[in-house]
Length: 424
Image 1 (cartoon, rainbow, N blue to C red):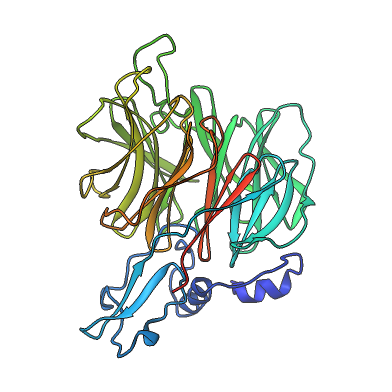
Image 2: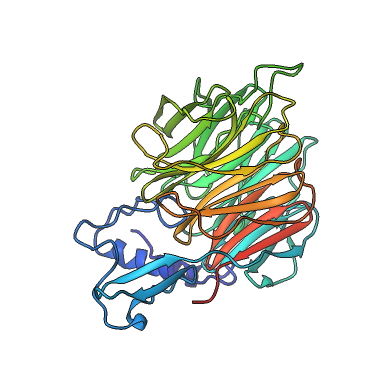
């Protein structure tokens, strides 16, 4: 029997501050009406709109009838009598000092649960912390390299790399450890609506592992040939730039499989669709004018395709470095419109970036020698507002970002930054 999320919040007292957002409440109603319960929720890819619902919303007479309870959209009743919901640019970033090096967070209702340095958990909303940090666990081991966080329908799962393996823990029962080997130095995690996905890399090898919502492994880590490539510039003494081998989710299918994108130095995008029962890899050549070498692709699925960002450089020592943003169609991963461009400052070897779809817009975030920056653009690839910058030189810092109700939380060393949508 499937327990509604609203009931779970009442049954699990450890879920402090277990609130239901408007999207989760709507999902509960939809699930009760017979929709596929394994389809991804709002922490995954957006679902296609029903064919019989006008894209601009239901009929209306005044703006108040169009309120979608989303602070990230401006709700209006058009002259044609249809509701419109246009994304509004973020306000200026609000920076908060944090403990140590935050490892990222997961959205729970209208909050974001952030794991701080020392494996301490703290609940936040857009205004700041809601409680004092509390220790989750001591991972032990001598090679505790990286971790990632993902929210399931009933808990928050923490993935750690310790001693050459990968370990899942749930915030609700941190003493229980589910371990598999081999692992990877740099890890990422995601909830696909059906499975927990663990991605890890170890030098030139990378792979995926899968667990159920309780953190129990259903498929151990498997290396996937061609599914994860090293982004490099084929010149200079190191012959490499960009992220280490990296596998990050770009979206989810209705079956709970993950879609991941990576890019080679010649602009070839490898599209990996994977689940516990198998995987497929296809290649697409991204041909764009400008510098010839590519790396550091991040992407997220939106309603019209994959919002993506990547870096293009002339060579390893080039002064001209561009970060580009576009919506790629799902058929052959080509831009729907001319990419947006911004300048990248400083080194490109550890180009740290994140890409999200939330609040009706694509959100591209990156770190470089001038600090952190964000570009927002619409589902059809148009720029939304001005590029915003904040912080100090952080071109070697790990960056993680997560959507939450009313904005985005960005974690970098010693700092948590909130990008807030304006009040409608």
